[in-house]
Length: 247
Image (tube, rainbow, N blue to C red):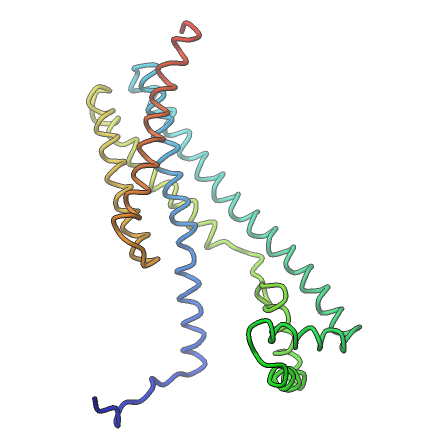
């Protein structure tokens, strides 16, 4: 194979930043999967339970819409607050680390060497790299924080995109279990709702498998089985509980 004219792709700092942002966007698969699954599974459980317990299409629609919007707001707000809280805790830990670097430089320097050694770098090379980094305080601090604490040097405390992704995913997911009840009587809408939800679960499983480079069949099967169990449990509870209490 002739590699004489092959060259490594050219990279600028903009390319590196763009690549980091691209991976960051892919990282939102957690919010997408979490939001969509909850948007599918919680409403299907609710509408199945209401359908089984009341037999009323109107009751199903009201309960489904109420749960859908309340759930989306709750999930979005929860993602925003939890993400912000996590970042604030990380900021506090970073501040402690910066204080330690300033007040105990020799101790932290030895710690840096040990961190490199823990990764398989020889003591001699670990010392040399640490000495070089000491000449560049920003890189030294960033390396210490990332290696010792395992977090980014500048955690994002305003996670609106993640919260938005979570909320919108929930709303989109909740459409599938509910939409059939707008157009069909409950005896037709119920099985159709289940079919649409399973179809949506299959699509989510495929998307998850593609983005995470997993086995598509296993990824899809896992999600579909969870969905079926959730819907079945909701329906059983919805039909049994009223009978147990004599409703």
